[in-house]
Length: 415
Image 1 (tube, rainbow, N blue to C red):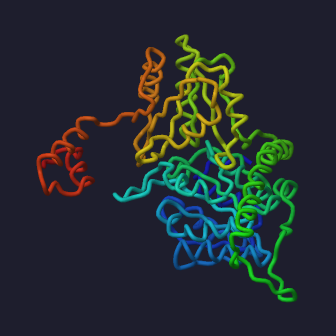
Image 2 (cartoon, rainbow, N blue to C red; image 1 turned 135 degrees about the horizontal axis):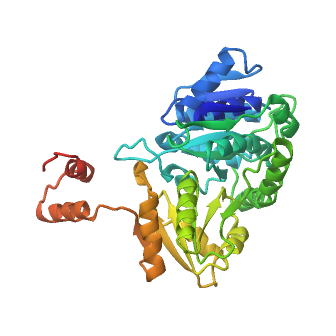
């Protein structure tokens, strides 16, 4: 059924159709509307046989989900940004225990300075925690990925994180084809846990494991991720058979067949990139795009195959590995190791800065015309950077960087 609906509400409705039995909620912008929507569905009796728990922190939210999942319940939670960092210990515990929790991450920048807008810093901070990590391009895909996430998590007994760009998707009102309960039930079977807490056979979970077994435990977590490389596309095919639309998978190429330049990215920015590709194609440029839907596990072979014939690759990423540069770009370079393709890192959209088609076009034009530095910051205000560096060099007590920069870029601001 087609609905004009806010992204967060659409996701809440889809999650409810998956029949979660425990929802652990702690509000943090921009994911709050998701758990609010689920609270209303529980209150109104639309979602039954579900215990909705308002907890005292993000750490408590995932800790309760861990306990619920271990006690045979289909468990769900959501968070963003600093909230994800606050639950970090539990993030590792959930994957280490092999519990099939599904969590929505409303992607948002990490401070300081405080910033509530979108980038992928939070997701990148937990990229090696052992969770399967999927990225949605649109709100339709966000709906679809949550349904697939529960089945994937429960088949592999591994937690799954569905990443949705904060505000850009969570707060956008657009048309979404909402599935029916019958469709979801046909795709997602009742939860049958691989491991449970049983009072008749007591056991400790998360207990001490020494050097004689720890490496094997970690390897088996890695093994689950490698199995997911097969299951993710298989589940996407099953989903298409039931719901009649293509969604999810590992990667999705766009006009890459004869492309000399391919732009790689994750999340909602793919829409802007596709518009840029179409416009540049109309002007005679052989440009394409590659969307990465599965960041963990990372599909090295599929990325290599999609980019193999390109002369140059631009990796646009909404996160920065301070002191190194690109995170996604390093993965792409690994996929292309030994091939010799020039890979450019384009850091863009940090803290929610707009990523415009015009700026992307200028950068692609530039790298097509001549070699460029490996790392570029899109629309960086170099005059502000130079002024702050000069200030810090000239003044012993230069003050906090963030406040000085803010005063300089604010209209009418003076130093």
